[in-house]
Length: 267
Image (tube, rainbow, N blue to C red; front, side):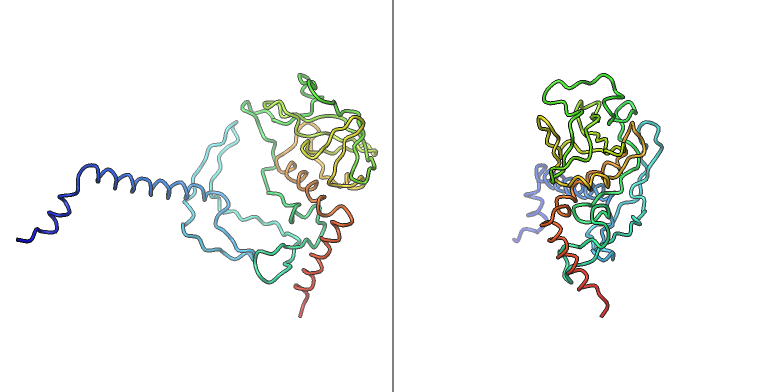
């Protein structure tokens, strides 16, 4: 007599197999949940021309988050699209090719000068105080190792000096120097990311820009704190100099712009 199919199936179906199947279902659900939570920022995706891009999963429903330090609440996703009009043009018909800046490449937020529209407020520590502050205002910090750059002239890659280092901005909870403060010859001040400076015995060298370009570094609103948006703009400006602020670099950038002009000119 033939054995019924149900008997064969359940004859090999024990508690261990049930546990294995349940684990697989749980793990698949966990991956689905984590991926959906990961889509609360930066989604829905868009193509290079601004049209909606296809996505395997849908964007999750908005969730309200309570911010620390009595900063209110925030919804994510908030459904707000960035409205910046970037001065750029395509250099090729196909996707994946670089875009060329059509305005001021150092400040337009294109290519190496790209920056995110972060919150225009300072980053806070666990007590609600700005993390980054000038050493002159903190008072409890001193240079314990290495050279103190204050008072040294700052030089661009053209070996010319637009001013001197007047202060250091420290990350108070991390006890690290994040920025050097430059006082230019006209009395105005600019910040220089510490990671882009080489401190020598008699000068501080910046390899990404020339002396004349320091005047164009984005300024900050306060002399005692720097916002997250200001940090991104400052870092983007210095980074752009690696492509746009020497003769050979400018030549390469100009070739990209010529390609973009040819591709985008009216027929």
